[in-house]
Image (cartoon, rainbow, N blue to C red):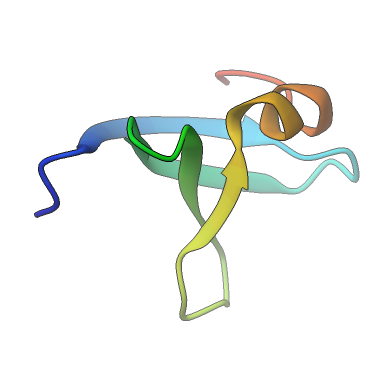
Length: 58
């Protein structure tokens, strides 16, 4: 595991009402790492952008 990555286990909802599972936070790059159902790759967003587009934790 990347030493700058902090594990997280929370669910949030995007602006369309779809739930995502947040699995980590990258301290160095200031971004949130999350998974979407049915999508095989990790998704990432800068923290400020994530705060604007997602609500939660659920």
